[in-house]
Length: 578
Image (cartoon, rainbow, N blue to C red):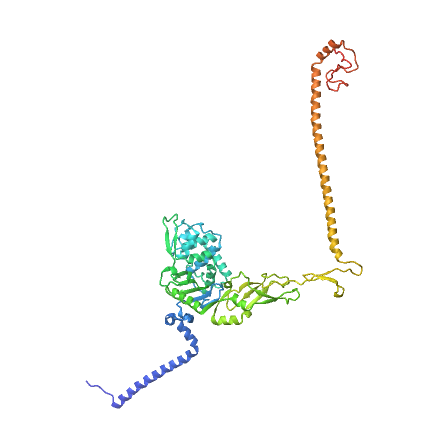
């Protein structure tokens, strides 16, 4: 078979063509890379941000020996914040205003509203159908199950029971929907601007969201309630038997950072917290720690299972290492404020030093600041303070009397620190005396500086007379009043005796009148009944009856008959009626 071959010169030129094609392609690629580098070079910050958006590439650069060098790239969390629990000042932030799902951290708001409500801890709650069917809960309840408010709080915060959260919400507001409105309104009162709640448990809902910054404000308010602080700091709790459970049930706190948890993530300064997880929210955690009087609150959202513990530890270590506690009371004592007092006594310049109350604990008013900020505050303390006086200060003023309030505002403090100011000394008022001119004075000066004149004026009148005349006049008026009162008392006593005497006479008269009427009636009756016998006996003793001018009616007494018994026979006999 015949194979045609190219001439030797033509074969060489073909190899050179392939080489030229490769070179052109290499040049084009290099040019593209140079153009791309020239485009990305001005966007170095963007490139750095893109690199930091991958936590797994930078978390390993964190050094536990230098926690004060913490950066956002050292955290697994998508959003995080660290604040001072007492002043609300933000100490560290990473995308803390991004709206995210809070998951079961929502239950801290539920606990806050329960603590602020009228519910009693021993009050019994009955599970509704809604509470029994809420789902996605580690601790369920049956419809009609009875449980106390205290047990429900522990079950909700320790084991994250959605059923118990629903029972508490219905007990406070009547329904889950109305409770969601209460939650949102309370969040607004706390200063939350990117928060909306619709459920008491935090299950995923597109209208149920918050931010790390808002959640920190909610946690700050919740831990101020003694009941909530007590519950979240408990490592284990035993639920009492009820109508569905005959035996006690013991549950552990889901917070592995508690010192008593015995877990590898235990943190010696941790005081309490609340975990959360849903598929949409990922892992969330709100923690509360205290060291040497400094209290910090951290919130991490959108992190991993172990990342929430690691991130919280880094945040707390950063706060305790990079910041320190400064007593504002001690700083104020170095350079106290002053105020002018009107009407001060002579010899007093009226400048009053304002001090703190003796009963005020210097540690009650303090600020968490960095070392650089501490130096700035010490140098420019007066520029960050505002004194509000209680109106114009007018003498006299007693030592220890409150005269104003001192307010301190620095940096991003959520609210100023305030404490009362009192007078450091007593300011007496100026004495005003009316005295004659020095040339006409003749007398002496008392110990209090009051001039007493003992000489008579041009008219012969001496002020010393008033010292005698006024008491004498007062004594005379008093004696006249006393005599008048004694006369009134005597007159009243005489009138009372007269009334008593008249009453006694009236009583005796009534008794006599009733007795005479009874006697007259008896006499008339006897005379009517025994008239004939009386006449016969008269005729037998004195003889025959004679005519008389008296009435012949023998049924009653005659005109001369007074009704009194007679010792002798009548002067004239009764006529014979026969």
